[in-house]
Image 1 (cartoon, one colour):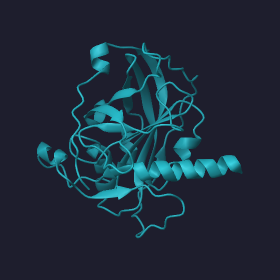
Image 2: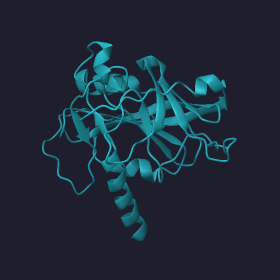
Image 3: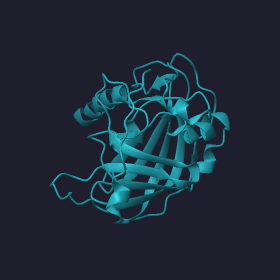
Length: 236
């Protein structure tokens, strides 16, 4: 009971930090740096203000694999995600640590959440989120909420680079629209990747979560694993 309560509190605390933006449409690339509508993941005790329209959850049974382990970096600190690429969606973003809950999530990058969520190669889920804007995670929003074809993402590969110059490749197995908590990601007991973006304007309940399972891990070019990070401080 104490463990369940602790996870519930952690989920609520992390949820407060995950406020991703739903884009206004695939307009000029400069729109990716302008403020847009937002929607927050809410804890189980929060009542949505409106029921989301139906988008089916889709999944693919993952192939069993032994979870790799991420070695510490040269500095002695655990390696962290530095770049996320979804080739089939045209997504290629630098990754940085999520700002404090009091700070609006950054534009122009994806962000990762800290413990109890993990990093690639660890025996827990890595959770990356980004605004649903052009140049960020807009393609996920487009396929899920506009085209109503989230299943197109199932089977796509996701490359996650880490600070120790490793490339972790994942395959998308599930797309979960209208999610309100981080509970399932926190409960993951093996290496797993979760991507998140928003579903509508400010106050829209629910997020789209994309789940991917590990395929391979291998060394990579250090430059590829350390892209230039240009954080844009956008508003709600």
